[in-house]
Image (tube, rainbow, N blue to C red; front, side):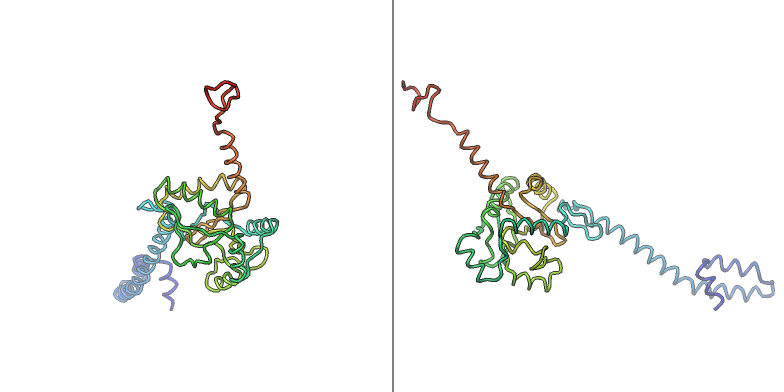
Length: 285
């Protein structure tokens, strides 16, 4: 028992030296025998400590690798150890989003009956697949709806992305009901509540989830740069979740942006009037 404290402090070589220097010559053989026993006991412990130390170093190195944004294949990868989102969400953001949706008097859709009613009244409009927009195969037909301004944004966003990269963006989720959100929360711990000041914005039809799987670093940077100015203008609220999706809330004011663009375009269209006010060029007043 007296050997155990020494074994935890000294190496096997130091322990042997201590025994040899402190025993009489006639007991040297016995001391050497004890040293051999100490060496046999200490080797597994030191080997184990080296394995643990190596594992710690390897784990730290792996965490750094996982946290790197570009991978060796050039694809965007979410780090597990040191995950730093470009668009972080927060409790305050969810509260602010719900306050804005309340101000717009957008109800939370309770069930499939209400969902059908909003779809028939065209308060929710269908989202169709295009060259630039693909819908997840498991997204039900009656869930492929959103608010008109959210669809406007999706059309503009996915068309611009397709023109840049010639590949579509996949949309995993659009409108949801309170019943659906309640079921979702049973197995998805990241899902927002179905009630309260931080309720899921999917329940109003203004939000979509975009898949981030397979995106290259260049593609994700393009998406980020596309969203940043719109976020600054209060038109969208992107949130990068720990799941491989980008959650985007689109506000009604996005429609006014397109209205302004349309008005500007019409104002700059050439007319058939010449500077003298004639109805056609070459004719006299």
